[in-house]
Image (cartoon, rainbow over the protein chains, first blue to last red):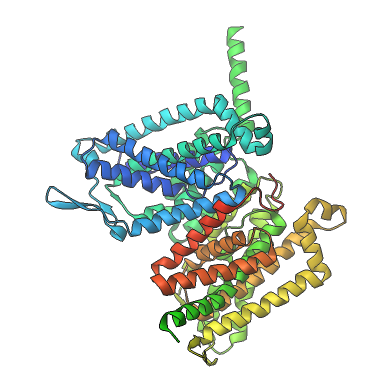
Length: 303
Length: 292
């Protein structure tokens, strides 16, 4: 595969993590415009762990997840009463505050002959743990997708558990959920924390692939796009977020020949698509039909 | 007068003048949100289209300022109607979040549309250079600031008269209050939706003109910027309240101006986002009338 295809695959894989984090929140009835904030926190923390303190890559990624999760927990505590539009706006404000704070964040230490570390608006260069560790790009792509597969499996299992049930109930009707004895604040805080960790994992993976991060990576476009991925791919299954990321990123890339008109045509396609399939490709009805078809097939083969 | 006090006073005065246009943006945003209970992320980009159209005309015919204003408003209006058709009417029966993502797709379209114009990335916009600056004591009232403030205040007065003193305004507020009850009273809710978009586009376009007459150049980033300002002002004012939006705009303007004068340019956006974050964290329960 060419470098171009590989980098496209990496982008789809990494943005899928951010899309999944937005998807989980959406199931809980929370629209987030701010997952890009946790993405860069994860990226910066993971990058600092490996590049500045010599941590091995897996440990660095874990540090990134932990940092993003802690930030998510703080954010959830601040927003424990905010709902609807206020949660969405609060997440946007949080991510923008992170971005502005990173513009002023300088922490450079000598590593070998160079000064390495976050340098405000100039960004954070030299996150080389992946390539000094001798890994190939192809191997990294496989690693990303294995991690993504495991994450999808875990999310699917979690959504079938009592926690997943509680999360969906909160998404449907918060007051009714509270009357059935669901500890609202605990579940909400836990879900936001986990979702932030997911976005942070994406950030860590991205930082080590790009070897470079800057405050601009916390652009609000990433957050809104990752919401759109879930909606385009379908809200019936976590797989929809990955499918949406692949469709959106792949589609936009294949429209490159349109140059200046690309966004106009592609934006128009998204508008039309949402009119035709407002709950995405893999919506709840489609998923139920697929399940029923699989069950029927099994029954027939047994008979 | 003590220099510090003078600076503070100047900051507040500047903030009030800036805040008046923020109030207008917030009112436009609130009109759409109030009637539809849906977020219009393309609100700023529709204004952007109008401003580019007006600016393009200004380049060709620098003489006729009234025509520049008319074309700006017309451009905003057309773009606004396009948003209404694509993202609101066609998706009326879907979840609000679907409309929101659709408006995001439209806003990408609109932002790309203006970069296609053969005019480079920044555009000139006419300024009220004929107005004199006024000095009251040690406080300087900049002519463009005065123009912004006076224009925005007049427009707001007109809008409030329309909304609170006419039959149309009453109908519009009835729909915002409860679309179901309004339907039972025989109101054509879809038509009121279009009117809300027309009003919001005119108000937003006017806010764009006033802001541009002060800044005198526009980049494609204006679109998202205006959306975020409109959203912030609306939420500061309590999401759906018209007088709240006016107050929210003034608060945002003064806070930004204070941050700018006291700490420097970088702090302006920081202060605005900190204010939005605080408002979100302090919010209690549901947004007025928002279906849960």
